[in-house]
Amino acid sequence: MNIAQKFRTIDQRVAAAAHQSGREAASVRLVAVSKRQSVAAMREAYAAGCRDFGENYVQEWVDKAAEMADLDGIRWHHIGRLQRNKVKLVLPLVDLVHGVDSLRLIEAIDLRAGAAQVRCTALIQVNLGEEESKSGCRPGDLRELLEAASRCEHIDLRGLMAIPPPGDRTESSFQQLASLREAHGGASILPELSMGMSHDFEKAIAAGATIVRVGSAIFGHRV
Ligand SMILES: *Cc1c(COP(=O)(O)O)cnc(C)c1O
Image (cartoon, rainbow, N blue to C red; front, side, top):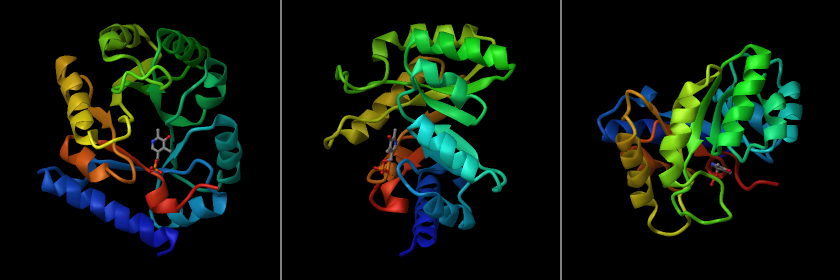
């Protein structure tokens, strides 16, 4: 299958998984993770209907976005670890920042967004594995971060994001993120749950994901 066919297949599987859990297809957004993929590959996905792209590395993304400036309607997602000194570069491009995980990053985003007179739409990333090396806040710190972000005039907080630890407990990790949302105000306050990747997006949707981030299943191996 070429990239266009793979994109359409994944898109259909997302819709089917949404229907399986009694939701409309439009309630789950498919983000095509295009880090370390070529502009040519991304254009193939765009031609097949893809509008949401996820990028991790800011400089690579800025370069590719410039090359794709002729394409209308793209929504860019920043899904990786965001360094505070890159916030300024990210704000003019980004539709949704998935990886907000510290008070200092919240402050930097609010300050920069204020200076640019924009509002930044963001998710708080939770580290469900509680591994030292991974990004994401500890579940125990979530309340403090949510309160801080909700006080920021230039941040529009929309929900939670997680990358479950590797292994066969991903289903319970998805449930865990959904439960954390319930414990912190529920879907009316935090409408988005960004969870699920190439190998487990259907399980994530069954657990309530509203955004899935799929890379290799659409684009193949990264270069
Ligand atoms: C790379 C990446 C993905 C996509 O992973 P695949 O296994 O290729 O689908 C999703 N989310 C994040 C945060 C990533 O860094």
